[in-house]
Amino acid sequence: MLNPVLTQTGPVQGREDDGVRSWLGIPYAAPPWGRHRFAPPQAPTPWSSVRDASSYGPPAPQVLQLPGSEIPPSTDPAPDCLTLNIWAPSAAPEALPVMVWFHGGAYLAGAGSERAYNGTALVREGVLVVTVNYRLGVDGFGQIDGAVSNRGILDQIAALEWVRDNIAGFGGDPQKVTIFGESAGAGCVLALLTMPRARNLFHRAIAQSIPRMFFSPPLAHSVTQAVAAAAGIEGTADARTLATLTPQTLADATRLVISTMGNRADEWGTLAYTSSSSGPIFGPIVDGDTMPEDPWTALRNGAAREIPIITGHTRDEYRLFTALRKRFSITTEEADTALHIFAPNGDADGYRAIMPQAEPGELYEKVNTDYLFLAPTLQAAMAGADAGGHVFVYELCIDPVGGMGSPHAIDLPLTFNTLDTGMGALIPEPTDSVIESGIRMRSAWTRFAATGNPGWPQWGPDQSVQIWGGENPVVRYPESERLELSLTDSCGALELLQHQELGR
Image 1 (cartoon, rainbow, N blue to C red):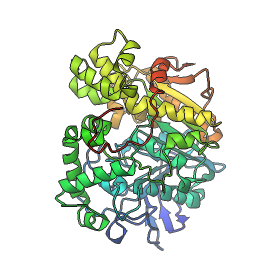
Image 2: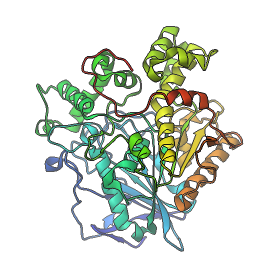
Image 3: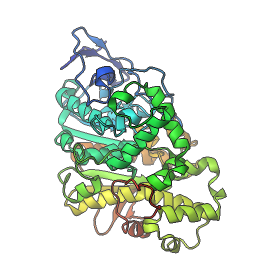
Image 4: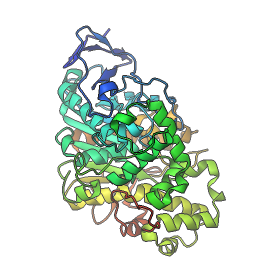
């Protein structure tokens, strides 16, 4: 039995297993319901007796169930979901670096309690790992009249404040905090890098596959009002009106809006096309207050110059979303449509010219990959480096036996060494080479958390990147030609078109 650890809100008792201690389901904020609905995170109610921290807290209400996830949409209308989980070595001679994980899931689903995010493997590399639940969907990211924006990210800031104030008691060093996340989690990392309220709460950042989904307030408000209308609310819905609806009602309405996205291109532009195929209709909001400017601009202006950053993407990001359609059944017409929508500045011919032999399926996949992940990830890297920051870039390029290359989220089982759960299904027959790439990746991540240097050259004019896969070489960025084209169309907050014809 472990001795209780005293936090600022009360003592917690965890468990120990095979040299790793864990504390699960610790509240870092009050349940965000009732009078706290759509409010910034509030302090949790203190407790005096020892709190059992041997089991996970409930997830935030889910809009959908992610592939490989064990967390279905919930029925609890008010779960105590703002909790975090900690893993630490049983014995450590000194305070260790801390790695705080923000899960992905299209800002609609996921939880720090997924088995796929178990911190044990990283802990064995000499760090503490913290995973965090935060509000999702309308509750976390809807733009609501009478409510603060970016509530899901404000939850993450509250969790980082909790880490700052309490992690020393668990053996962590509050002066060596690294935030890391994948997909929507990487989007949150990018947002946190540039949000004034997050300043000084972390010291390094890892963003795995940054998505493009940052919203202007008008577009985010339009999406929220569409969900409210789908839930049966007439007229403009404000915080008081939406608070009468359960999270499940809003989740049902969100799914309905997603199913009709193809009809909304005249207002929502490219968002309508991306969301109809890959899900997200929410994301961080560039509201001028909690997030003063879009993160690419903020990084170029030096907002996170002092914070070392690792960022990168998988080679075949969009293949995950086309897998069920059998990628090479994409028609010429579908590829043409995707090129006109997603090619930088609508330059379909220019995009074709850099891959003249590509079949429709490959063109469709690559242009979606570039718009959704390659451009936002590499533009963030270049913005940070151009401002004088320390930025390290990678690309994951494995080809698992029986798999489908390196699609979106295949980095998760390598990051956490959880090949037997979640997106480990993308690596059905792990070879020694794939396992070795995972070992090296985890070693680089934890080395970076300790020192700020993962072990390969920073991004610069030579475009050096670490490749995870094969012999794990350091090479010139393999997608340089596509990147050059992508740079002609700068990332920024997505805008409401207001019934104008779609054009980019």
